[in-house]
Every structure is written in C-alpha cells, then in structure tokens.
Amino acid sequence: MMHVVCLDLEGVLIPEIWKGVASLTGIESLNRTTRDEPDYDKLMHYRLEILDRHRIGMNEIRQVIGSIQPLEGAVAFLDWLRGRTQVIILSDTFYEFAQPLLGKLNHPTIFCHNLEIDSDARITGYTLRQKDQKRKAVEALRSLNYEVISAGDSYNDLSMLEASNHGILFHPPEQIVRDFPQFPVTLSYSALGKELADRISSDPYPG
Picture: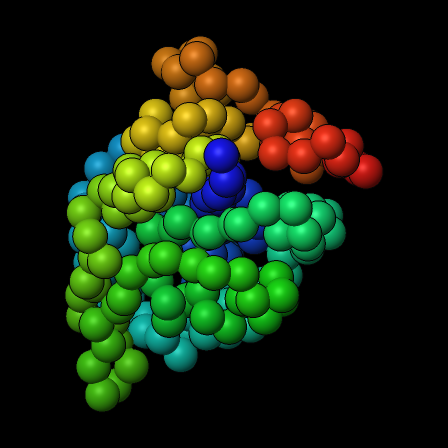
C-alpha cells in the first residue's frame, strides 16, 4: 500500500505565526493558539476582534511572516521525508500567511484556508476550505487506498490523527498528552523521523 504523510505546519515545521504577531505588537492575548483553544472558529473570531480593535492588518502581519524561519532541522527533516513518500501539509493557517513561507521549506504541497482582506489591508473575515478539513482530507486519502500517517501538535490536529492509520504527536501540550494517551509522543525530528521510518521506509532517519 502507498503511504501519504500529513503534517501540521505551525508548531511542527515553523514557529506559530500568531505568537510572532503578539511579539511584534505587544498584544499578549494574541499568544493564544490552537494549542490552547479546541474551538477553531471561536479562536479566529477572538483574534479578528483583537486585530480590528487595535487596527492591525496584513501590513503588520507581513512583517512578522517575513522574519519567520523554519524550525531548526525542519527543512532537512522535510527533504528527507519527501524523498521517501508523498507529503501533504494540512494546516488551519491561511494561504496569505503560508505562501511566503513555503519557499523556505522547498515548496511542499499545502491545504489550508483563505482570508478576506479589504482594500485597506484589514482582515475582515476568513473562508474555511472545509470545516474539519484535516480529518476530511485524511478520510479522502484513505478512500483512495493510501495508508495515511499524520503528525501534529494541537487540538485542531486531533481529528486528523484519529482519522489516520497512524497518528503521532509532536511537541504537544501536556494536557493533550494526558487526554490522548493512544498517540505516541515525539519531541524531536529525530524521534518523529524514527516513527515515520518504521512505517514508510527501510531507510533509518539519519538525525
């Protein structure tokens, strides 16, 4: 059976973008992410209300995105993985955020959402590709007879992990580890690479 590996983006391959926005603007409440809030729509409405109140738009957020680099070891890990199997990034970020970062990761395939931006570069809303798109993407791949292995770190990754043949947590919060003990926990690319290599390749992960 052919394999597909599905990875989250933020927290797995790059730092959390919203934490960067919080750091740039000094707005501590923007540090809240999907590692803290299971309800994605609630989290996004919370973020958009803060952006509107403080008149922060895409111009400020582009400054943050321009400064972001992949997590240490992420590019080598992703290159190794893509040399052995198909990889899809399943993320609840937005193309407007992710597109400038994909070149730094050697242009992997990504499925994510879109922002609604007005003529003044203010973010007025967002359009989900599909509700619970990570889980539905995995289910669609499995319906095509792929064996799906997924890895993520946050509450919004759990349905993806549950729908996969094999789900792996990567640097998750302790609460998720306690609540979902069925998933192996990895804390480095070396450990994640070993979990994946055991299933997709006779080649051991070199890290």
